[in-house]
Length: 383
Ligand code: CAA
Image (tube, rainbow, N blue to C red; front, side, top):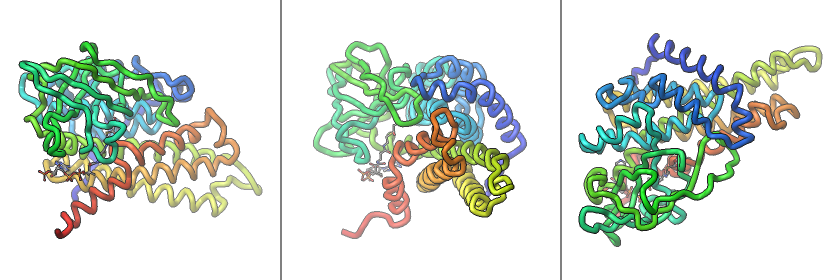
């Protein structure tokens, strides 16, 4: 591992941090309380060229590396994890499969507006009977002349309802398992494509999460992404990268909670000195800083591997697992350091504690992360 953050990366961090502090942080509590999707902030991020950070300029992107994108998600999550996942789901899940598996025509038609931030992207894999077992997909796509007819429902879809472009997974050949699943690009507004209500979530409440409903939706055959039957591998490869995004989000939450409780601990006086200098609290701060440093190394090194075109699926799963556990632990300890004050609505650490939990669940639970990691280490069991 050669991981190194350059001066350019740190300059970018300063830029996006200043934006997040000014444009997001002051409103984060209100968005959380009101379940408000910050569409105007997403538009401003698009104006800044951040909605397509890691994509080539010829496809409307900013031509930056994966580490820059990871820093962007981290810095947004440091103040509001909901805004961070809007970007992560858009870049990693909604746009990447089109970039990696799309034809030139599909890239021009769909990736360019996504990368420019003119359109928002989402990814529809999860179903009520296909969560961790993503191969259990039941949504069907039946070929009919120049179209596929899509029927089924997707649940828990980040950016659902707000996004314009969806990468959807459906069974084209039933009865053959994962090899019978295909991927499609589906547009909001097509007849028969509707949304359920936004979920009323515990955290990341500024992000929109909705159910997708497909009733005889006519998808042009040109919108098949990759080959028929390649959908499951497209989904898995997409999630490998998505997990770097979620790991970055978790890292940002951990950093935000750490900074907040550190400031508080230096001001709050009990037993005649700031509580930061009581060993019980000082040790918590030491453990937090250690976990954050370890998480950052795992996240950035996974980003570096992806950037270099090296295998990174295992490292992304390790980063996601470790950083999300760290985010939950650190935000919990941050509430503890704040004491009764930290338990009140409107305190940033209270929101961060709720926000952190999802990072252990979505884009593969941490139990599935261990399935992925051990699978890489051990291979398939003997027959
Ligand atoms: N890249 C490319 N191909 C892959 C792959 C990868 N990372 N992982 C597996 N594959 C291929 C395998 O090589 C295999 O191909 P062959 O049949 O040709 O050998 C095929 O896919 C099937 O692989 P498995 O037998 O390993 O599949 P499985 O059914 O046992 O499942 C799993 C494996 C890792 C448990 C997988 O189901 C999984 O990742 N589950 C979690 C799903 C998930 O993360 N869901 C989150 C949804 S997105 C989200 O959270 C929403 C949001 O908006 C934030």
